Amino acid sequence: MSKQKVVISGAGLWNPEHTISNEELVDSYNQFAELYNQQHAAEIEAGELEAKPFSSAEFIEKASGIKSRYSYSKEGVLDPTRMRPQLTERSDEELSHQAEMALAAAEKALTEANKSPEEIDAVIVSCAYTQRSYPAIAIEVQAALNIKGFAFDMLVACSAATFALHRAYEMVAAGTAKAVLVINPELTSPQVNYKDRDSHFIFGDVATATIIEQAETCQSEHSYEILGIKAQTQYSNNIRSNFGYLSHVTDVDPYSADKLFHQNGRKVFKEVCPMAAEHLTNHVTETGLSNEQITRWWLHQANINMNVLIGKKLMGRMPTQQEAPIVLDEYANTASAGSLIAFNLHHKDLQAGDYGVICSFGAGYSIGSLVIQKR
Ligand SMILES: CC(C)(COP(=O)(O)OP(=O)(O)OC[C@H]1O[C@@H](n2cnc3c(N)ncnc32)[C@H](O)[C@@H]1OP(=O)(O)O)[C@@H](O)C(=O)NCCC(=O)NCCS
Image (cartoon, rainbow, N blue to C red):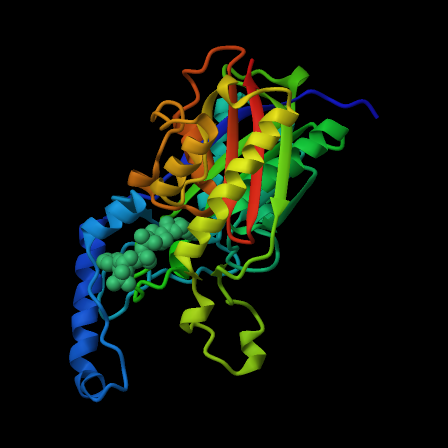
């Protein structure tokens, strides 16, 4: 089997129509906290319950770099008596919420790649959560686009996008697929504990999509040869969600705090930054390059201070916005989609021959990267 040259030929980004600013989010959280503290005044006074502390927009921006986030459903999140998004359940015959997000991004990626659905022969939907186990969201999208071949879902938390791009690369390189559509419909807001001051601000909703194909079929204005892929995982409980179908039989509250996103943010910061910097330097070196030759780093977007630290380790100095673009201020953490949002918004200015790196890091722990070169 001959190894094909593989390229990224198109990228698509879809934003929900609603945004929530830090100020709006903090305002509703603080109203909730006040209400909670009033309702539980006696237990708090008796030392049986802890009072809910107040949140602050200044803290959020300083600690994370986040100013705002997109929200698939704003209603409900800002209601201090609800504190979670409100979605309407759709019937089995209707397009599901996540497939709708995925389709919107997929159509943009197809247009950018100058490809029609008939030319795609595999679809991967990969994200931190899928709204159901089966049938796969990917197969629903495949049907909606009238794509032949096969489709499947993958879950790899923050590295879902890069790990799916790896699988697409391998299929195209091996010749088992000619063109693969990878989609990341990150509907993160239902897993956020909006009653938790430490994490209520972290996530936003978005969908990204990417076309991977053989170089010889590529007809895109902006395409990138994939020079190498690298992944690693190391088990950690520091970012965790216990949500799952076992709650039906364990007689526990399926929506208690441990079933939503929770983390030990400090530990994550300390452990993941050196791992990611070492991984990236090793990957770039193994590709026969040095970090100085990389024109653009499309890094995972979880926290601006993480990106600054990793960028400094890679470059020996503070990276500029052009070298390692930050999209956190507008998008917040979008689980696996962050590095691809950065790619979508900041790749067309690269010159033929320029090198770039797409990288994710986070829960698992998991780290995934691709070294690419503009054609
Ligand atoms: C989550 C994260 C932004 C928190 O920043 P931090 O500087 O580590 O903040 P801490 O959690 O240590 O809290 C610092 C103080 O601010 C307080 N604080 C936390 N959230 C607050 C909020 N929303 N508003 C005001 N104060 C807040 C804390 O209670 C703490 O107070 P204390 O010092 O009196 O105990 C940071 O740890 C981080 O980015 N970690 C990386 C992991 C990550 O982003 N993961 C996402 C999934 S991949």
